[in-house]
Image (cartoon, rainbow, N blue to C red; front, side, top):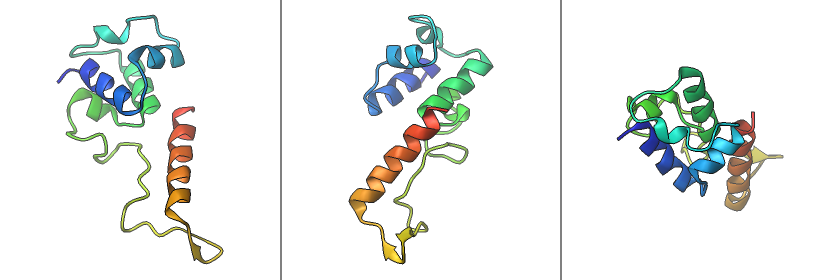
Amino acid sequence: MSIYQRIQDLAKQKKLTVRDIERALNYANGSLRKWKDNANSQKLVEVANYLGVSTDYLLGRDASPKDKGANVVDLKDDDVILTYEGKPIPPEDLKLIQRLMNSTRNDL
């Protein structure tokens, strides 16, 4: 799978288009389409950060976007116990917190 195909797949998962990513990062229209097997390293880092994955995932070195090094917040981990004022945080609030954490990081 090419770098561009991975970006396409991630965009679909996040309900984005590749053009949305290009606009957000101020890239020319169609610039990501040119990324088959190589990419400018700085731009690759920018796209990985925007999508919340590691550059290794985009390059095909990691099989999953959640492999070590990925910047995806996962609050479903059994090792994560979140409470507020000593009470467990409800699942619907955890989903909101996760969405906020992921979107905030992507906006940096």
